[in-house]
Amino acid sequence: MLLTVIYLLASISFILGLKMLSNPASARKGNLIAAAGMGLAILGTIFLYEESDGTKLGNYGWIFGGLIIGTIIGTLAAKKVKMTAMPEMVSLFNGMGGACAALISITEFNHLAETLHQPHDVQLGEIFPASAAYSAWVGKSIVILAGLIIGSVSFSGSVIAWGKLNGKIHDFAFKGQHLINGLLFLVLLGLAGWIAGVYENANTTVFYVLLILSLIYGVFFVLPIGGADMPVVISLLNSFTGVAAACGGFLYNNKAMLTGGILVGAAGTLLTILMCKAMNRSLLNVLIGSFGGHAADVAATRAQGNYKEITLSDTAILLTYAHKVMIVPGYGLAVAQAQHACHELEKLLTEKGVEVKYAIHPVAGRMPGHMNVLLAEADVDYDQLLEMEAANEQFSTTDVVLVLGANDVVNPAAKTDPASPIYGMPILEVELAKNCIVNKRSMKPGYAGIENELFFQPKTSMLFGDAKKVLEAISTEIKNL
Image (cartoon, rainbow, N blue to C red; front, side, top):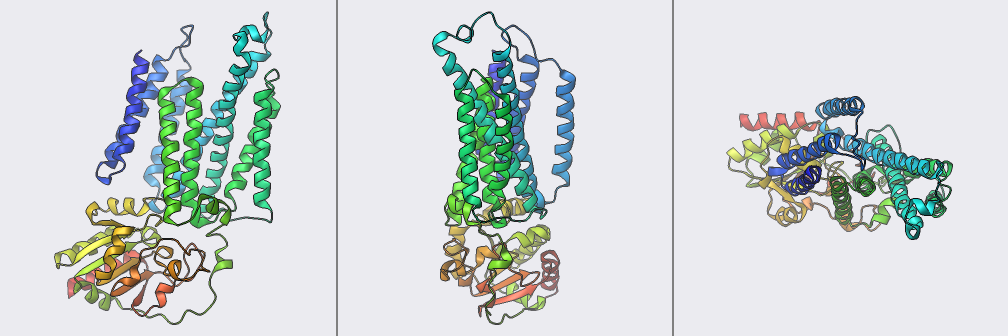
């Protein structure tokens, strides 16, 4: 009874924590509450769980050894990771969750196979209730196989996504790959159906073939998808991990595990849908469209005209005497770790009576909410962050837009060029402002690999250099005015 209460409290903490994550002001507290609930569920399971015959878990040395090692690795990784590398760490940690779910399925299938293969004085129909023998096997094996396939795909796919985000793995596709992926998927379903249907054999060889093919499918599933779509892929794989964990909850009749898995699966699915909507693309298009891949192949080669540069002093004057300034953060700001310098500039302008806001695109950076996290780290007031729709309504009344490392999310080609790979994607309409200053290291295209028409428009001025150094220099110029 006490363990049931602990699982109930843990489930409540997951729901409450997820709810608090929706607001940056309460997100940290929500994360801690959910983590505390998980810790309570783990300790409750270790010390209070009993088998039907009264046997407890035991093996405390192995259990706490694993917990200590995992805690040390996780803590060091979280403390040392740069904010720009956060998406790849999330992808890797998510893959570990998928691997755990697959390991649960392997363990439970082997246990089930041993039960069926060991000698009995009674027939299988007498081990289970006669009328339920077949359905008992099929029901349990389907959950085991679902956890195996989904968890394995999530693990290997997340590892590939991790490699793509850190540049160690490049996009790879070959003719007919999607057809092969489809056939492989059908083979996975066929093998799973055969294992579940032929319950007398509990064939472990076929089971491990299914495991290997699932891992291969995860690799083939993610490998051709372009880098620009990795945030969507990570979110989708995250939902896979949640579903796989929920399968483990079904197997063990563990309410906390089941609730956590369902929450992760549902949240990941909803986030995937929202990001696809933000890019005006279907999930199928993301998975087979290879958008963002082969940047060199799709980069525009036609001449766009001339661009003009602006000096630091002119930038400082333009910002200081503006009534309203909108800052658009992008991946370039994250790479330069320039969020603190950006906040300092914002405070300087505010002291001079300038209204400063931030325009946030839903898929800016390499992970949903990436820009929000960066700015929150620098203590930027959340009320100053505007979502895309609200920001677009204010650009026409903005004197200066300062674009910091953003590229594809401010490209007017998404609205004007039907031939563009990003055509139809909702963007931040910065071109509506009176002046637009774009800070970049160079004229190199963004993740989508296409030229940005914004850079060549009459109202746009380019300010080249590292975002952090540029922002610090602008602040110095403003102080000297």
